[in-house]
Image 1 (cartoon, rainbow, N blue to C red):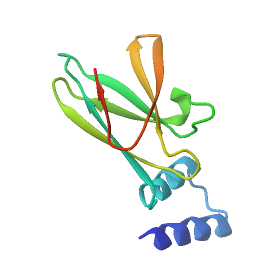
Image 2 (tube, rainbow, N blue to C red):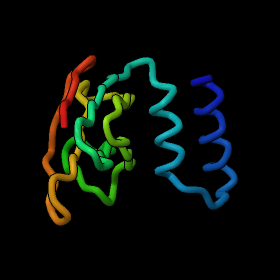
Image 3 (cartoon, rainbow, N blue to C red):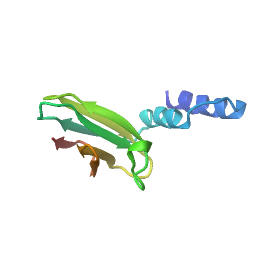
Length: 111
């Protein structure tokens, strides 16, 4: 699967077809042999927004994959990695504020 995704990305780039690099990067990350699995347990009665940052150096919500953790649910997030083995998450704490959290493989976050 990983070879197929890499071949697809190379094919699209060679043909100069319009495509979203973030989408290609996300596909390659899901096929990465190195991945970090994080479990988020939402103990609140409202959904919680968690953003999986694409960059561990400069994490921003604009360059992240949004995950909406349902109320009173346990939710798993998988993060493929190359340079940083910890998943870099931004957890929305207020409408205009978020906390950056770096979580190791098999880590659990309770909200």
